[in-house]
Image (cartoon, rainbow, N blue to C red; front, side, top):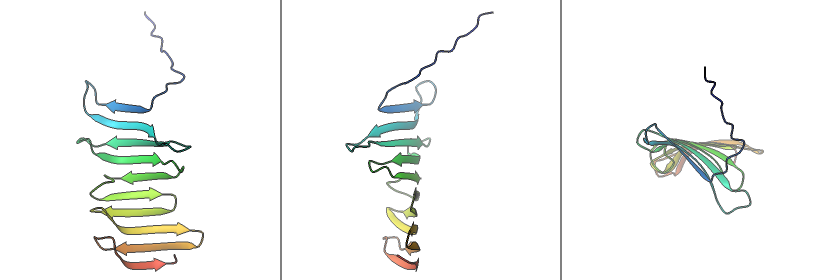
Length: 122
């Protein structure tokens, strides 16, 4: 019986890692770093079958984490950060829940992003 020996990689240094479907198929995920700040940003993008971002998790140059569910440039998207949850539609924030040490606020906006209802403190 032939024993297979697994090789272990202790460290691999890359700036961008692309995961494809088998047989040189579609790109389904990208892990990348970038930015010019003291702390470079890092982003993980999980792509749908059309190659559009379905889920994007990133930590920016300022160290703040953000999660986008849906395409962050168009369509309906939910953006989650440590102090806010924003619902986007057509490129504008249409609903938002925000918090700070002073309290929280819930806002509802029209399709152009103009606040039409607000509840809580700012």
